Structures are given as C-alpha cells and as structure tokens.
Length: 242
Image 1 (cartoon, rainbow, N blue to C red):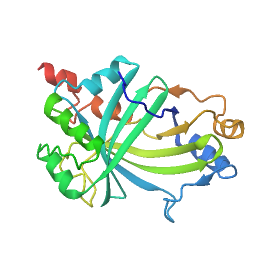
Image 2 (image 1 turned 120 degrees about the horizontal axis):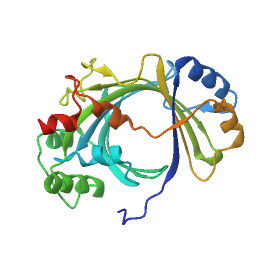
Image 3 (image 1 turned 60 degrees about the vertical axis):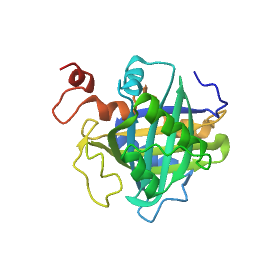
C-alpha cells in the first residue's frame, strides 16, 4: 500500500485509571524531561479535525484492523490559529509514520469550502490531500480535542504522552474557534490515555518506570472512538444504513 519510503516508529497505547497515570507521571519526572513546547501549566491542548472519504474508508479499515492504513487531519495547539498543521498519519501494525506540512488560514478555508487548489508551488503533501478530496471525496468527519502532557528522552528518540479529557465534537467548522466546543467524552469516566512512541528501542529504565505489570496495551484509535457514536448514539455505519 505504501509505495513511498516512510520513517516508521513504534507506538504503544494504554488506557488506564487516572490514579495509575498520575503515579506513572510522577515516576517519569526522574528519568525524562517535559517537552519544550509545554507552558507553565505543564500541558498543552490539541484540537484536530479528522477527515474521511465518502465510504468512511479510514474508519472501516480501523474497525477491520487492516494492517496498513492511514488517516488525515488538520491540527492546532492551544486553540491558536498561529500554527496550523495538515498531517497524514500512516500505520503498519504497531508502527506509525507521520508526514505534515504547515498551512495558513486561507488554505484551511479553501479546504473547508471544498476548493482543490492543486499547484506546483504547494507542499507535495497538500497536493496529495487535494487529490484525495477530488478522487475520494475526502471531507471533514469529526473534531477531537484533549489536553496532552508530554515527556521526551534522547535514548530511542522516546516520547511519552498523557492525553486527558479526550472528547469529540461535531462542530466541524469551528476548529479555529477560540472557545469551548459542544463535545462529548469518549472514554469511561476516570480513565485517560498513555502513549509511548520510540524508534528502534524503548530504553529499559523508561519501560520499567511506565509499566506496572497490570497495564495492557490497546489497539484503539482516538479517531475510531470519536467516530464510534454520533450525538444520537448511532454508529456512523448504522447511520449510513438507515
């Protein structure tokens, strides 16, 4: 499926009670440092607009557990439009690869209006996305928002993140709005997400610091969870079959 060469990293995910994550976070502070992008509050917010095609291919491949799959999103941080990123995330089993390019508000508006401005001067990734809009009818699907506490280490190019208050919104045109969106939680109350990303190896001292022996790796995707139910409680596939 993936013809171009992509740099893949390992990605492990754990859904755990907040009390367990707080304990893990306290232990990590002695072996890893906070990401430099974190402000004094210790975390930053992420808001992403995910896309899918007319047949919900990205969602259905996730549900089916297809080994090689991808998804598209536009992402901002701390509700600011000063940095807008178009991203394609690819997965091959437990390995992930991400390509991204920065876009401005004008390009974002064109995308939201369905205008495919394919030009030689565009970043190649943007033109690839435009082609997907034209040939596969890729369009906005859901907004995902959460607060992230990130830790980094040079060994293994390791990154550990705690994602809390994961929620979804159907206000698809409000990605750049500097306000709370109408949203619903996607995890059981009191549970949040721990993600571990690394290149060739996960340093033993970090692995032992994170895992307690009771943690179980998950295969879930934030995109799948946020698309799993609409506000009416119907799965998107059920909705399409009505």
